[in-house]
Length: 108
Image 1 (cartoon, helix red, strand yellow):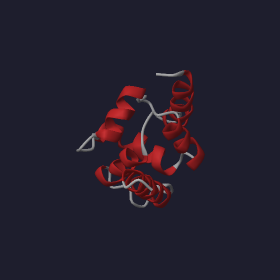
Image 2 (cartoon, one colour; image 1 turned 30 degrees about the vertical axis):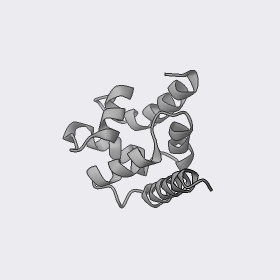
Image 3 (tube, helix red, strand yellow; image 1 turned 135 degrees about the vertical axis):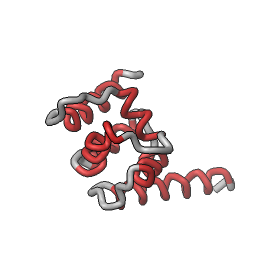
Image 4 (cartoon, helix red, strand yellow; image 1 turned 60 degrees about the horizontal axis):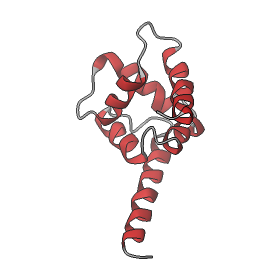
């Protein structure tokens, strides 16, 4: 993991782990974002990521190649977090990413 990626994920983990007894690791967080089923022990952490972390800190994870908007959108669905504060923005950014990829593949 690059220094930028480590910095971005450390910042987010400091926010989501602060009030919790059980601390989520970077590997566990990434596994949760890509999971097809939620793991109840990490639910408060994922809810905090999607609802309490700033748009900027979530964006920093994407810019540092820690995750993608598509993975975040997948996590919204798997973890049932459509009501999270960042949900509309994540869905919009995932759509923009897909649209950009589509246009690029069409030679535009």
